Length: 306
Image (cartoon, rainbow, N blue to C red; front, side):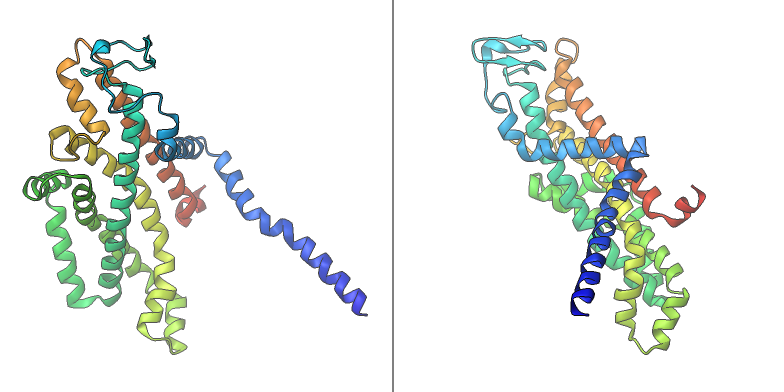
């Protein structure tokens, strides 16, 4: 009997192994069926890998100057090396600087969104769950901040506080939370009336447990989708601020600074602005594509229509 029981247990474990492995495979199968999601995931993965391993694959020193190679067109080669995307006004390799700039874009985009998303989720969760006068006061604060254009608010704060990578991350993080707060608050107002929440109260669970264990897990998917889109918005904001001189300062390399350096040479050295602009466009499009696929994947209403 013991042998038979152990054999049946092993058979059950073997039968469960494909099921345990099937979840990632199902996710991959869903991704492969979506050209938009596949394109977005490939672009985002490529940018992240470029940011992490950029120093290992960069053909030149991003800060290395070669005054004999100033304003060289893409494909130029000399005794120092080749310049696939050309050089700038100081003879620096455009490709190497784009690779270096990807690290700043990924860092600013991800860290800023983590800060703003955390603040916004907490704020919206409390506002929607508590309700009443507190909800009205908190939402009027959000309404006031949303009335100010995001980029104008960031420019104003940057001009007062000063520029720098750490400062820029904090500014973008502490000014972008209002959108999350508004979205999460709306989701909480809907979820808190669901039957399972009412049943949790009936079973004697306190309000804090209901909020953290039953409401928050059911609204966090909206925050994930919004965060994916906001990464692209944040990258654009960083590039805009750096272009205007209110963001990251040299010698740190950013795509916005590269655009700023090349704007006065756009007629004679178009590659100085064209390639950083293409890098920004592709990155933002990849993030938007990925966010759109995540929305289709996580939103039950969209899945139901599909």
